Each structure stands twice: as C-alpha cells, then as structure tokens.
Image 1 (cartoon, rainbow, N blue to C red):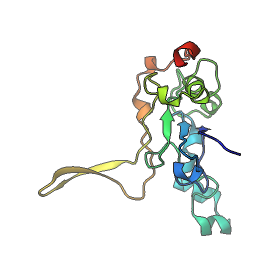
Image 2: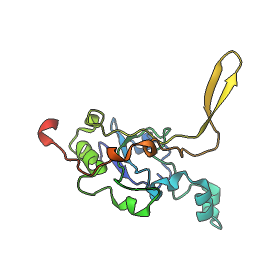
Image 3: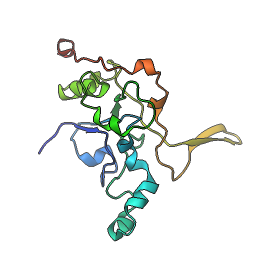
Image 4: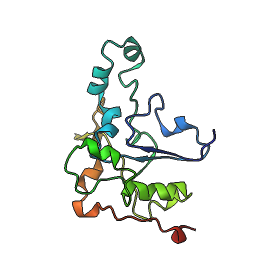
Length: 182
C-alpha cells in the first residue's frame, strides 16, 4: 500500500519506527495529533511504564524497554509535524481525552481535514500547528560561551508546550472551509 502522508492520533508510541523517516513516505510527512491531557499519547515516553510492562518479558528486555510502545512521535526529535489536538475544558491528565480526536468541531478533526484534503501545508496559516514535546533541560554557564541550555541526557520528551495554552484558546467550534483550500 502506498501512502502520501500518515496521521497518528493519540499514539502510544511507534514501536520500531524511531523517526518519521522510518515510515518511508517518499516526500510525504508524518502528522501527529496528541492532546497534552491524553495519557495514552504519553506511553511511548515513559520508561518506567515500559519497564513495568516488560517485566518478565525476555523479548522486551532484550529489544529495549520501550518495546510495544516505542518512540513518542510528538517528541521534538521524531521529525513529525504536530498539529493542535487539545480538549476544551480538560483539567489535567484524563483518559477520556483519548476519545476526543474525532469529536465534531475539535482541533484534531479540523487539522485532519486539512491533511486529508491535501492541504497539510495550510496547518500553519490556519493556526493549527503545535510545538513538539521536548526534553527537560538545564542551563549551565560555560566559560567563553556563556549560558547554554542542554537537554538532560536519558530523559524523555516530557515537557509539552500545549500545557501553557490559555483555556479560552481551546475550543470545539472548528470547521473546515473547503472553498478556502482549493
């Protein structure tokens, strides 16, 4: 089967695909919708959860702690395009938010309409791009260079910029304007 693009929603990890390039889309893109309050979309980045899941599983221990979950496609090192997929009035981590991606008027459904209609490049002008999750960092002072921020090695991309969006900016009144995208 040939695909131009791939859309991953609330993805708990990409198993053995460690980057968008692993999808072999021949010029296409991997798009990711991951609500910052959806705990399922965080499974790929939680080493301790992967460790628990793989306890007593020799294959999981030999192939790596993230086996069965894999790399978080919403992380900054994956190479995907993350689109907005937040849930209005959601307050904190909520398993029900994993079922909101196809809700009529949602940010995610609006973004998928752009992508499926061949207008994924319009996500930016439509205000539907989200920043990727990133690793926590520390700022250190290096003589001659000054202050430099570095990622903390061995930590997952657990900082989600979508957490800081004002609640009023997350709505469920999005519609796809087909004539605008011709």
